[in-house]
Length: 94
Image (cartoon, rainbow, N blue to C red; front, side, top):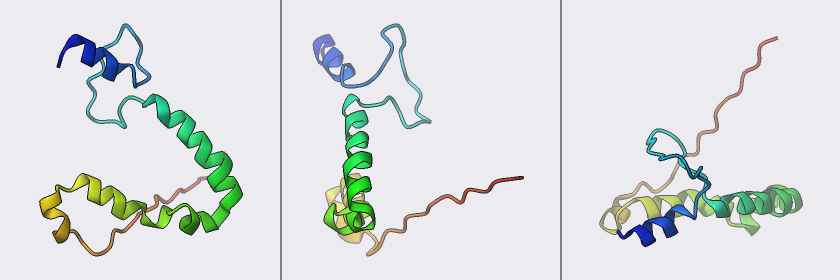
């Protein structure tokens, strides 16, 4: 990868100019387009669609979409027929 290609790729993320970011145990650097996309989801898809967004915005299909992107094409036919989404439980102490 050339320095020009690297700079172009790096510019797609929120990264301080004076830092090299190599942490592999995190969500990673924030892609610049993610901020706008999250705002769109919150302000229109979630706010306007409410629970119907699961169908009208195809949220229900997202787990399978992610699996198909993560698995190599040769292993996709071996993927489980369902994907469980686990929501963390939030406990509060008084």
